[in-house]
Image (cartoon, rainbow, N blue to C red; front, side):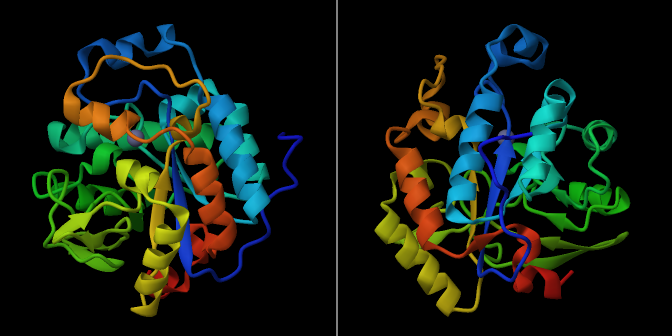
Length: 288
Ligand SMILES: [Zn+2]
């Protein structure tokens, strides 16, 4: 168990949600030298960095939804126990961190099942939420939503309403998507308009570069419009000594831009805001 944590307070209604994708610093899609065959030979940082996130959440009195990679659950079962013992919810981030639109249906379903089995294997009884790596459920892979419904997933948080990884035409708030096998609740990450563009302020470089004051103002205005804000962080983003590899420019920006001081900025946002797990946000419950 985590001796430093007294645990997050129990579930109660919250205006906004914080989600965590539990993965290693080397879980970066599409980089040959970081293919999954090599993962076991790379130094692990996920226990240290996830514990640091648990501490920040605990300090802020916030619950979160942790989307855990099945590969991580298999190697660090006690870490999953610590997350649960600290009072947080668990969902699946897939097993081998593959982009959904690069998989066929059969391989995707096998990957989801493997991750769910790994999480069940470490004591997580039910998994009803999913987040694809790199927001990779998009126009090329909408078929995946029906696969998730068939696997018992009722909430998906894999579609980003921005260019490059998703589409600016998608709704920015939680919405139900119908599939031939039934509905699924889609929960997009926070996006705001800035300089005429949709800016991904709720995760990655957009979250890391935004001052706490500006972030809290953005969340306030989204809440005033009747929507929850959903933020996403990764344990490796608050690593005090983050290992680095050579990456193509776009990935380098996505992974390494504005890491300095991010833990403090995140702590300020968490302690000033009203954050819970996805299941604590009434707007997400009403439509499930
Ligand atoms: Zn990921």
